[in-house]
Each structure stands twice: as structure tokens, then as C-alpha cells.
Length: 63
Image (cartoon, rainbow, N blue to C red; front, side, top):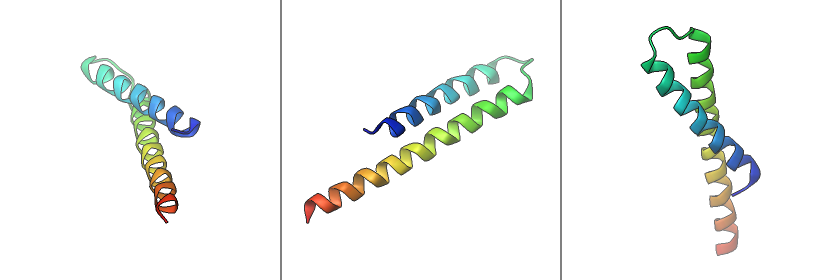
């Protein structure tokens, strides 16, 4: 895994944990909740881009 994919995955997992914890707490500011969902989306996009890159490398090596 590249560094970008690793960092993106870590950010996404932290965002997921933040979203779950902030959903359990009743008095959380909406900014923190929004930040956690943005981090979650960044992680998902990074994982998708990393998977596409890996698939492209596998496609080139198969030729």
C-alpha cells in the first residue's frame, strides 16, 4: 500500500470512530459531527483511488 492510501485509510477510520462516538453523545456540536463525516468520506475516496491504482498496476503486470 502506498503512503497516501495508508494515511487516507487511517483518516477514514478515525472519522468513523469520531462519528460513532459523537452520535452516542447527545450534546456534540454539529461541527465535530460534520468533520467526522468529512474524514470518513476522505478515507473512502482514498481507499477507492488506492484500489484503482492497484488494479491498474495488476493490469499492467498481467500483460
